[in-house]
Image (cartoon, rainbow, N blue to C red; front, side):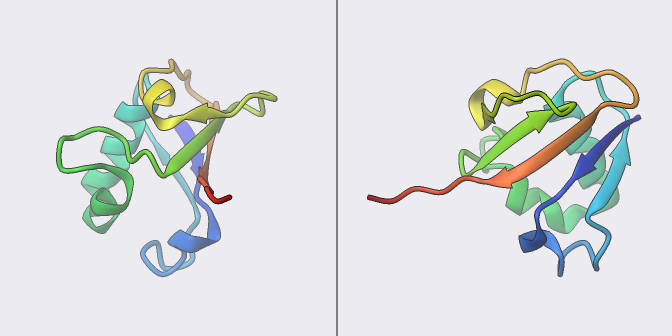
Length: 92
């Protein structure tokens, strides 16, 4: 199982349980498996098309690299790795 750390913005949906675990070989699969257990997350994590929301960015296993949603969805994960979700920010 991969571990997923959600940002504080997800606190109410996850009822304070910001650390979740699920099986999957890619970031997208892990997120979909968490959504199967917590359906309210689906509208926050995925677009209607099934793509990961572009408003999220990810780090995987403590890498010093941030993956935008389009790249993160297909990133491989192994059991025990941690995926951290960050809410993307924009502005000018």
